[in-house]
Length: 312
Length: 312
Image 1 (cartoon, rainbow over the protein chains, first blue to last red):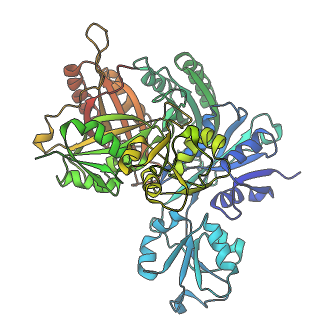
Image 2 (cartoon, rainbow over the protein chains, first blue to last red; image 1 turned 120 degrees about the vertical axis):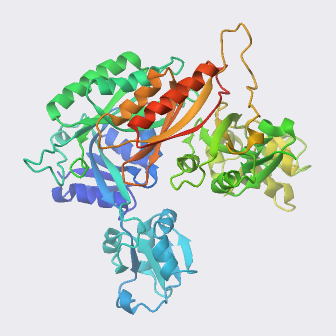
Image 3 (tube, chains in turn purple, green; image 1 turned 180 degrees about the vertical axis):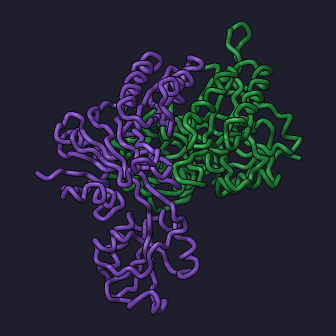
């Protein structure tokens, strides 16, 4: 039976692309979900084997919906853990209905309306300011939706800003590629699994670009841990963070979300890592033991191979 | 000359209310600004004496626009610092045009359309589900805007969800108060000043509810510090955080935003505090000295009296 992989929809979204690139070689069954909650629920109920969910963008920062689901304040997703990550560089293209324009070189300026997700306008300001000043802009719910609209139009001359993946999915022409302002705008996706499902325990998300032997570089394993502390106790947070250092775990990121139990109390998300996999496992377990002594609650949200460590 | 206080508009917004409650007794000139950027720019250019800006909500978490302006990546607001804070509990009311309904007890169910900011629907789900199931909802740009719309309508029977402050400002009736689901939903506002303006240096934002003598409680002073670290150096973040502990400064919150220099590198915002004001000042200065040795960049964003410490 093919692996079932849930992603944040619609079809041809950046999450779809991340899922396709992570699982493509496994001929997995990729399934769009309407919301972050739906993707987590499918995993918890074992209706999906994996879920691919955006967790952070290099320009906009953390995706709070994902943090709130990982916080799992109502204990709905207790078996869901992170098992991998995928970095997708966000490239935008200008799309038009198939056959409308021979090429960008011959473009006659006749596009009268542009479609994309509100966030994408700001990511392509230089290109739009140069070639589409004053052209009407229509917000749509996703970049993929914009591609779909222009793929189907007959009378209007519309353009969409979306990915090459969306262009291929909806069968539009690509007039110009890489129209984004920042070449390094990247979204990090988490790959999640249900830890009770045995058949997903075997799959290792290998690095796409692993360190070569003799390079002196080693693959880092990253672990995500969430915890809450007693805020009335001075130094409680510093003591909790010190535990990572004591076990040789490098802190790679910290996030906080409201606990929703009491105002101004937080759930902390700490990502940490180290390079040697066996020692790492032991260090993480020891750190978790120590954390349980100084925190109110503490949860191991999974360990996976860092996909960035070679380039870093 | 009256103090000029910029707040995030429109008129009768929650920021306006926070500004009025913080500066009301000083008969200050309160000025709405269209954006977070505008408020910061007014301060930097010394066109305003203070600015009142939301920085965190107890349910939704940090306000990233405010963190991004405090990050000040382009060095535009180098003289803007935090000098105070204000906590405003968010209470929503059901408003209607003056004189339309005698009272909620006599309400005849004739409201056909509701207006409010998109976030407020979710904050009043219980009340709306009970009394306004199926009634048309119109999103507006602010809760104050909704109050303004119903205050002026003549034919339609509309209701707005907004604060008592907005009802008083726009002259509507209040049919029901405190219709929010969570009684403790609170927004924290920062009060900012330009450190080069001498006349704003004198004003101390005293606690509204200071510790009584003999209670054993003392006022805490909080300090906000931002820094960036060398992410390629293992342990750099832990070492920076350890400095606060070494100087007896309790970490009260941590936030991160993308550095925008390189993906997956961050600007950290650490809030810390201690109770004795003179010692605190010295501890903060020593901590800053030490931080400068282990960080790439480091900035003191101000010290102020904690407005929560008594209740904590």
